[in-house]
Length: 301
Image 1 (cartoon, rainbow, N blue to C red):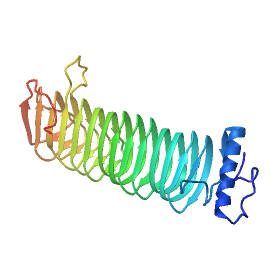
Image 2: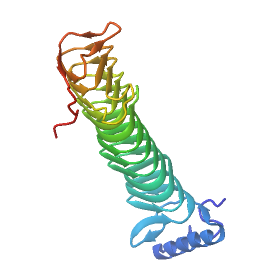
Image 3: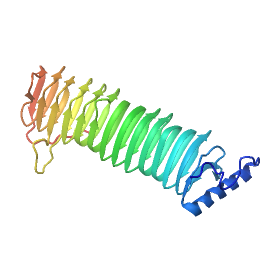
Image 4: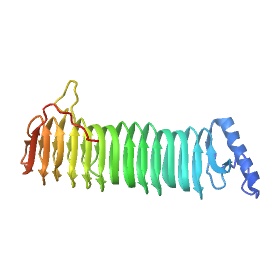
């Protein structure tokens, strides 16, 4: 293992910045040629390309301490430390441990992140595992997403499967399977498109959901709009089913079947194939039912 560049070139006492950059570039190229892998500790100035600081290679580990923007390009990239500006990453696998950045943009096959970002975050990957915070808006495109943290701005996501935990301002998400776990708190609105939807946490703002099945085990503190359409194909017992198992404040539901086991405070308009089923001591005193008669359940806009 090579720590800093000591085994390929003694550069720390060279005063001229241009010579420093040249030797660092040569060092990285030499290590890659010999091993295909580098393990470096990077400190400013690191490795300049077209005037912007960056590090590029095959597989490498970097400890960053950068005052401005920084770019990482590689195969398996592992980083920690701090980038005061925007960190841009292009890699096959990106692993960040206890990383602090001003802003973050990552394109990779797999992303595993722990740390915090002051500003906006953009992630594009197959698998994303996030544990940390984003101080502004966050955009995620992924197949699998496991999120545990905090987003102070808007979270927008297009994913296949997602499990969300933590504190959020508001969320707009499209997924096949979407779980909002019991540790999730959404202060604003939740707009979701999903095949299977499960809520265990708390949504303080309105819930606007389009799904195939919906299980609401958490608390809804503002009115809901649920369009849970079973589709036209062969149906299972859960297709088109809405379960309200906790506290909510009413709103509108269009579904094949509605089961209520919790408490509904406020008017609830239901359009379904049959009247809602109230089980296990459910309390819902202001339900207005309309037969669906095969009508599609979909958003107006």
